[in-house]
Length: 374
Length: 166
Image (cartoon, rainbow over all chains, first blue to last red; front, side, top):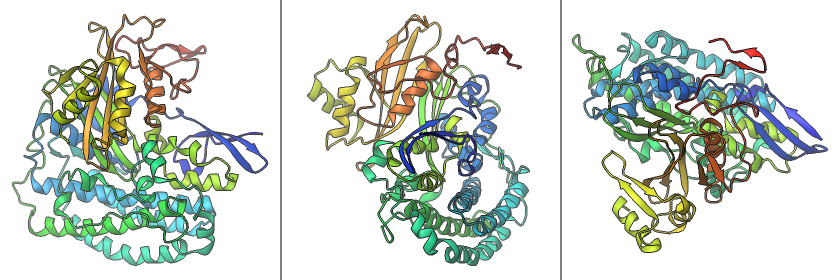
């Protein structure tokens, strides 16, 4: 029987249609159909200058706009050759807001994943805690989800007075909440039964399909671009890379991918604490500090092509730029969204599973369709 | 391995006729491969234990403009184990006629990632990939006319008699 799942499925954060070929309750074949959200990022980018493209990157992974901004801006700064001139305070603020956004993105992934499995309370808890992050980021940038905060050469504005203190407060508030969430969901026997040994993605398949982020680390590989490429101020910070070790079930199953996200939240909290301390003491706010001092009036990189990659909550995001050296508009921007590659593996890992398990598998990939379709 | 060492390795294996040129002026040096050799070069780079390029980061189809009359595909390879990266490029001249698409060989047999990326390049730029298992449009509707990321693409005014308001 041919069965349509979607086009609106709660865990897809957007619109995706899966065409299933089923035999009773067993899924024989999965054919994903994309394109419902296609908003032509690459076509738009041809007509806009580099600064104007930043708001469009927000809309790709709208759960983690800061990280998208950061990746795009880093690429442009590399092409201009100004990446070493960026003040340390700016870099620390960038990392701070990116990690806050990473937690917010993982909270959505975890909360909606609970719903997929049938647990409603974790969803409410995750959204309650995410709301604190949204409020903080709104306080800094003025927008709730689409920030356009990190600019080429600097920031839209310095963080508001008292932001660092509020970050420390948030970490203090959030740590016990995380413990509660773990007790309710991570160690829940029903949740484990629904996710462990389900949708096993072996490591070689994950690499072959270009999976990255928690998908790849959930298959047991310790690989994170924050450590591999050592971009921004990450080398100065102390944090671990969580990866699946197979405590429960098989390495590479849904539970492992979920657990990697849970562990990453704890590591991001560590980074936030360190950044807040650095911003309060070493790289303090001074009256003459202007985060826009280095923002160029016109961004005209010399003729070249450049591929810049960074670690987003969902995996490796990459921007491939071609600059013609004459105009302030890129000749071509190709974006490689992590969800696009992560989703492509779905037909491979969901052959012969139950329909109910397929829902668990889709949720565990944590796709955002704004990035699949761009 | 450095860029020069990888180039030497390829010359050793295939002789000089697989590499067309090299572009070293930018931040990331690139090898321009002759378009018929791309699959065997990719396979060799993946399986050689010195290079071990097991991860295809990105595959981009490029239209180099109306005057250039040239299409290309750019491959960004990463080796997770060896921690190095490489850029490969292939070019082909084409008169931009939509009945006569530029044709490249598909690397889906080397990396499965290429499957969707090549479908995207076909969808948006009209680059045909020979040997692709299932080459059809991915983001646009199946009956969409034209290839929107081409530099000479005229924005469609209507789709199935529905006016597209701009």
